[in-house]
Amino acid sequence: MLPDPSLPDPPNFDGWVCPLPLRDHPKVVMGHGGGGQMSGELIEHLFVPAFANPVLGGLTDSAVFTLGETRLAFSTDSFVVQPLFFPGGSIGHLAVNGTVNDLAMSGAQAAYLSCGFILEEGVDLSVVARIAADLGDAARQAGVTIATGDTKVVDAGHGDGVYVNTAGVGLVPAGVDIRPQRAVPGDVVIVSGQIGVHGIAIMSVREGISFGTEVVSDCAPLNGLVAAMLAVCLDLHTLRDPTRGGVATSLNEIAKAAGVGVELTETALPVPEAVANACAFLGLDPLYVANEGKLLAIVGRDDADAVLAAMRAHPLGADAAIIGECVEAHPGMVVTRTAFGATRVVDTPIGEQLPRIC
Image 1 (cartoon, rainbow, N blue to C red):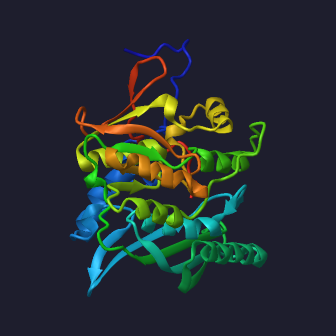
Image 2: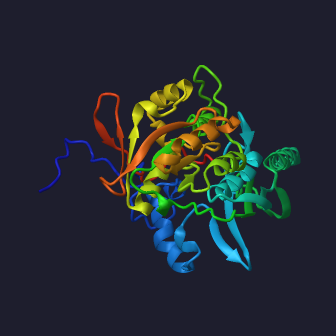
Image 3: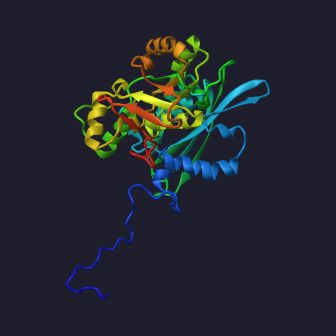
């Protein structure tokens, strides 16, 4: 049948991009770095087969292994956040706290960090100096030593200013066994404070959006808080810092690894008013917004009160709250009970809500 010349030409869809990239996309897309399902698939299907070994197999934020007679945790992370400076911190603070916190989630106290700078030709040296000063200050606050480093320069237009990589090593105390697979039905889920703050702080300065009040990042080292928790309960089952993908993604990863269900109570979630308002304005869910100074703890019910009290006695856990529990039902799935008595599934996002938050 010939086209009717009186009708307009059909739209040309060449070059259109799906806002949530196709799962079988043949090229790397931003969603692969967002901490959601696409990130998981990239790791599972590309990196794990290439690097397969028992230490890597746990797929935790830090690897735990024995070297001689010493039990160590080891982690590495790269930081590409834009803007480089934001309310409450900078890429320098993130570079230290991110790695310190990854080690702390296995119960380790970070001791030494490496630091690699990738600088774009043309970036002001004053910017680099400010980041280095922030990084040094953050290391001193966390009680870690920058022991070695590296610097590379890339051509203008190929580096986005400054990228930073840090790797860290720390000691795991005897008797500590913290990993996602240890979560069991009956365990209590605790969050150390108000959620969603870092992601909204980044978005506010990146997009120039005012939410009526300044939202300040929660970027902070959590090793002191974890030490306080271990002092009252050596048998913490699972710890996780809910960075990319937020609380929802972290809990989904734990539920899948442990084969348990997780039930949250929506009214118990500590969401600050500024974050709630910003999320309502932007169409975001606070459960998926990144944090950089909060942790999730999954502990036995008999230990929950002592752990919660220890957390609330620490400055970084003053707003800690019990937000849910692990259950036998719906293994591998996270749900939340709403204020109206309904239940909704809290799934892992495919890509990311807020790109480049760390």
